[in-house]
Each structure stands twice: as C-alpha cells, then as structure tokens.
Length: 84
Image (tube, rainbow, N blue to C red; front, side, top):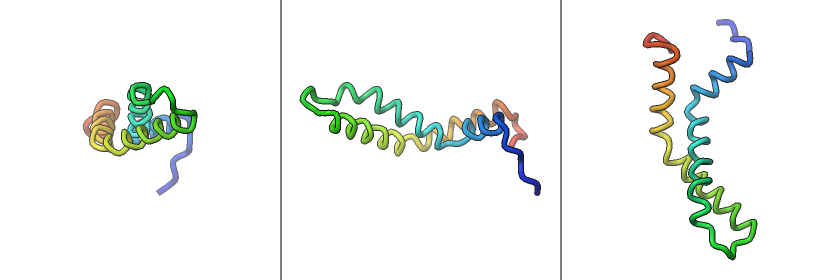
C-alpha cells in the first residue's frame, strides 16, 4: 500500500479527526475557564502555572468520550456514511 503524501490538507484532516486533538483543546479550555476561579490571590507564578496544568490534565482525562463522539460525528458529516 503506497504512503499518502503529506500535504497541508492531509495534516489538517488528521488533526481534525484525531480524538487527542479535541481532548487537548478541551483540557486547555477547562484550565482557562476554571483557572481564574480557583487561583488564590497570594499564589505566585509557579502556583498559577501548576494550577492551570493540573486543570488542563484533568480536562484531558475526562474528555475521552466527548472527543470520540466529536470525531465520529465529524467523520460521518465530512466523509459521509461510507467514510473510513
């Protein structure tokens, strides 16, 4: 089976259909949304960074099923019912 040429469109669709891309996006979103509410005023920069990373990792961990649902829906919508 010949290798598919790596084009910009191929990279975009690969990222779009990869569940980990959506999990990372949801993790960053959770960190950005909840971080300001959980950060104490007396925390230094390291504490704020650790809080954001902690929330992002928790968001990544809990978003497995939604990410799979999103990628399955996108595949059906973009590629049609016979798409891989």
